[in-house]
Length: 351
Image (cartoon, rainbow, N blue to C red):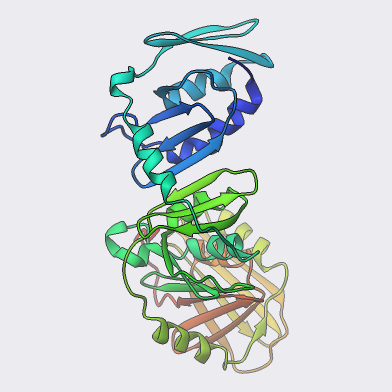
C-alpha cells in the first residue's frame, strides 16, 4: 500500500497513548493495522483511528515502527506485507520489520468485542474537555488511591480531589452517566476533539467527528459529593480578592530565580496581601527572592504559604482568591479550586 508519510506519522502519534509501556501481554505494545483502521489497545485504553489504505492486516511493535516512519523524509512511502515481515520503502529509504504471525494475532477479536459496546452515542457538553483538563491535575498519581486518582463527572460538574486539593468545573450541560475517569487518561483524552460518548458498563467510549474513538475503563466507587460541595459553597461566602493579571508570570520568574525550577513540587512560596500590595517571596537552598506588586486590597493582612508547583498551575486559570481556616479558594468563571495552605516548607514530592 502507498501512503502519505506525514499523514500516517500523525495518526500513529495520536495512537501512542494506547501502547503499553511494557509488553507484559503480547500485542499491547503494537500498532494493529486492520482493513479500515489502525488500533492500539493496552487493556486500559483503546484508540481506534480510521485508515482506509490497509490492504492486509498486520500487527507490529509500536514505538519501533513509529521511529522508522518519523525518521523518514520522503512524502510518500510504500508498505509491502509479506508472511512474517513488512518492507517500508521510499525514494531514499528502505527498511524491514518483523510482524506478528497470524496465529498469534489475537487482539482483533478483543477490538471487535469492544466495538460492540460502542452504541447509543450521546452528545458531550461543549466544554467537557476543558472541564476534565482543569480538574485532572488535582487527581492523585497513585492508582491505589481509587477514585482519588480520577476526575469525577457527575451531572453537569467535573470534580477532583486529592489529599490537599480539589477542583470543580461546572459544564454547560449535564451528562446522564456518572463517570470516574483516571486523571492520567483524561490528560490523553483532551488531545482528541471528542464530541460524543457512550458507555457499556465496563468501558467509556468517546468519539470525534472524524470517527476516531478513545476508550478507557472508568473506576468504580462513590464520591463524597455533599461534603465537597459544602466546602465550595462555604468558600464562595468569603471575601473575594481579584488577582493581578501579572501574578502568574511573576510567580514563575520568582520560582526560576530562587532555583526551584528543577524539582519544585514540594517547595513553597509565600504571598502576603496588605495595604494594596501583594508581596511574593520564594526561598530555596540557593537563596531568596522577593517581589512586590500593586493589588487592590485594604482589609486585614492575609499571609499564605502555598505549594509553588500547584500555585503556578492554578494561576493559569484563576482570577480571584479567598481564604478561610487554612484553605485557599481560587475561582475563574465555572472553574474553582481549593487547596490546603502549607504551614511550613516541605521537601516531600506530592505529584
